[in-house]
Picture 1 (cartoon, rainbow, N blue to C red):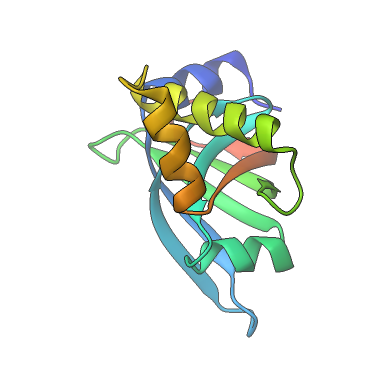
Picture 2: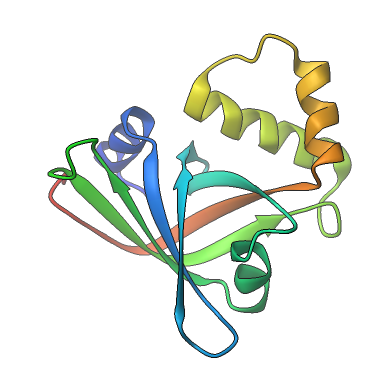
Length: 138
């Protein structure tokens, strides 16, 4: 679970680097944008990105969220919870994708258009739920 201080940091700073694990055990890094969501930090991704099958196979991950200067940062170590069309009710997934968008960019000008794009792109919502949080921003 995130502290209020960690939530506030992630609400203000969205640039992040996600570490997942490949089949061979090597690290796979992804540059992403995140926002606070429920009990962690969340982002969306498409089915064709390496991070999604990696997280479905092995949910262990680390997420570094940084200020633009790289001087202030948080690291969330934990497990990813993946919400996708194969494991989540369509309405629940739609609202999760919207809430994640809002936490990063605010209101979308056309939610119907956004919803259709999420379906067309086969987007999943991923929440990194930390077991351990550390960094200079705490």
